[in-house]
Image (cartoon, rainbow, N blue to C red; front, side, top):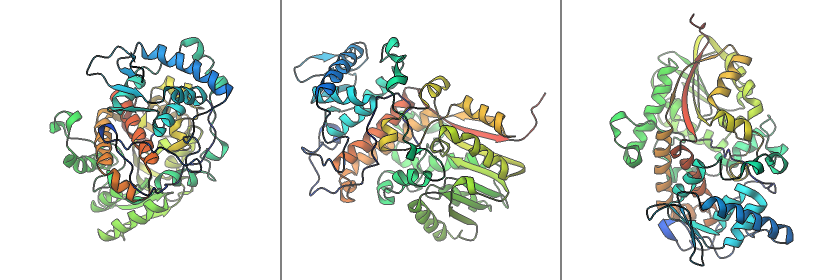
Length: 457
């Protein structure tokens, strides 16, 4: 999965992704099984979280942010409960509740860092939610109206830009990928299913309500997603397949089982090691090669190119070379099948230079395309054309719910790997924020098929 926060934020201090920190014991648990934030947070590990901004500037910015937040909250379908007993929002008894623990610290953080501060304040424990995804879904559905229109016009004056060292040129991409995917294979195994698939599943039509599909259905739905992509790319006996973004090897395994030969590239050494181990155990080492290589350096000719939720890590300015690379290596008559998280085109244009909480803590250098952007880039820079696409955002919401539930259920095991409660609250916020985007319809995920056929007259 490659998920990028697409909302504007105020300036934030540049930090690298914190390393896991082991505490002497697992901390207490708060509502809904969410690990409670520790009383003290190590500023060396979590420099943006340990202490709320202070000083006159932070006080003034915090008061202004508090007024804006309270003004917006009064009209939102949720309940924001403050320590003094006051409650804001139009939500009824069943509405999601955002419980303020330290409202002054919350306001100081969002005043200083905007939506980066929203995430950091949750990591610090300044606010809680028994239904975190529900609270964030309300914000996602109202993102265009949370800030008054006159102030939105000033966003370019205060929005931070992506640090130069996080731009996805060939010198930086390896470190950007490593900061997420090389955290720990064991960490990912705690909340992913047996296929180790880290992207949206595709549940069958007879699965029932996607809001309640069970964990036991996930692995099969992940394989169904992969099989549909392989079918659309025409992968069969003898097909030469290029996979851009190996993950932990499930797609390569299923392509090899069809009799294809696969060259798969990744920049994650952790993923490469486990994928190679799984491929060898399945007896396909002679059919699958996993290279630790940038996609731009791939040579050769392939009948099919498949890439699952990797374009989001490419970066806005590098989309042309991503598709030009695919165009360059695709054999005559070949097909391309990609799975991509997308957002509305207008929002994409408005936020393409923003630096966000997800960039800072989860996916440095990432950015979500729109369908229109994919169509435009391929038309302007390649001979490829989009021929077919299928949206499945509700399937991603279901997938994320299952990951979230599994992650919380195994929180103590995650702590045993050395990931402290601030990390766990960060990861939970990431999963819930992502789910909220799909549940609100603000985000979608598409399976897109491209080829070089002449347009039909």
